[in-house]
Length: 465
Ligand code: NAD
Ligand code: UGA
Image (cartoon, rainbow, N blue to C red; front, side, top):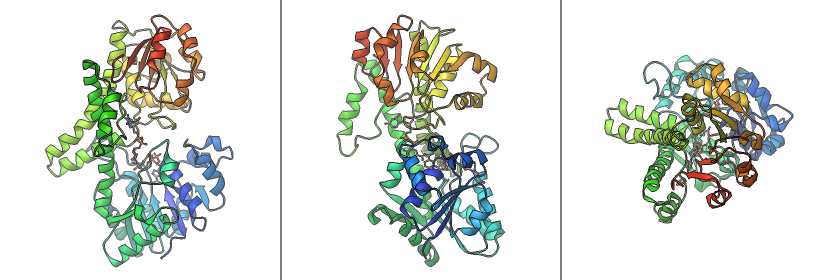
């Protein structure tokens, strides 16, 4: 069989960019991305491409090319399911905030709603593709719902996890290290897998398209994120030893990364990893391990998250200690709020935890981020529920001009590695700050020799000075 019409449920950071690339590379396939969030769909349809709901370098050009030709964004979920031969489920799978597994397990309510909706609407056989990141064995739950509540049509369930990273999503989608497709090892399963392989083969070399059983595919996604996050926590653990011993974490990273068995990537020490997935997926893995009674396995992986929490907290503790043990009433400017550069996504950003810790100490924070809106920043703080929204607004300001943001500040904290920060006129910034002028570089972004020669008091993760 050949895939001719796709419906993707979920127009988020994965659904939007992934489907835009499929539509661009497969002009004969109709791709409809649907979502229950009307504002999000309206933004995807906005004529002004700078208003797309997801900021990703290169995304606007692809949307411009394909939208209205074979790429459509709609809130009519039923119609898109009905029309498609293949349905991607790309909805969010956040950590549960209630009931059994609260704070650990993945909340699969959105997945189940999708499965029930597909079962209700589908009048013909369909391939259902898990694009969301899911606990291993979710496919059996989806299959059970589809088979028991459907209209007697056949469903093939494939697992096709997404490995894109935000900020480089388009690059990652155009040239993926691999595409992973898991399916049932039956004749029908093989046929469905082949159809999806053929779709990706429109632009991905077949050697990079891997097929496995469903459970390996589901588990490989959680494993990949756990291994990546583990590298960041490992180098962050070393950053603290470096600060005590005079070693330099960048030199240590380079030295170990040149060992081809270790490799150079994902060894940048930082204020802590953020993003919507690392923490949630590891906690999910921990929960799965615990549910099988594998306590040692669970404890091993949980340590990656605990180390990350420590890294964020020790960054804010250091700011407080350095500013003479009190930040009350002091202006501290945050450069960056997003969880990494080149994205407007702030989910689990280290900046949120650091801000919350400093606000608890009554600091006055001013935030500048080139892509994150004021509304998003306050919504991130309100979600924590640490204080009432009025207090957040009294203590934290969002500024659109970076120089104004840093004027009269006691200290600057670099929370995101946006390139533009490197090009600022640091002499001018120094001249307009209170003295001593402190910089806490949580991303090892700036040239500290230059800053020190201007007169700044510097702290850098992994060297301490
Ligand atoms: P997101 O929150 O940006 O988008 C999910 C969208 O699904 C939302 O717009 C929501 O309104 C919509 N939705 C939820 N239930 C729906 C329903 N019943 N019908 C229609 N729409 C519905 O999430 P995301 O970042 O795109 O992540 C989606 C999945 O992909 C998650 O499982 C995540 O773990 C995984 N993933 C994310 C990334 C990433 O970089 N963000 C990378 C790889 C995998
Ligand atoms: C990550 C994975 O890299 C993707 O493969 C995966 O698809 C995705 O999660 C997902 O499942 O959601 P993402 O979170 O978008 O992608 O971004 P990363 O580049 O992995 O960065 C995650 C966090 O780790 C960021 O806060 C980043 O600043 C931090 N990081 C990364 C470091 O602190 N040091 C590093 O060396 C690398």
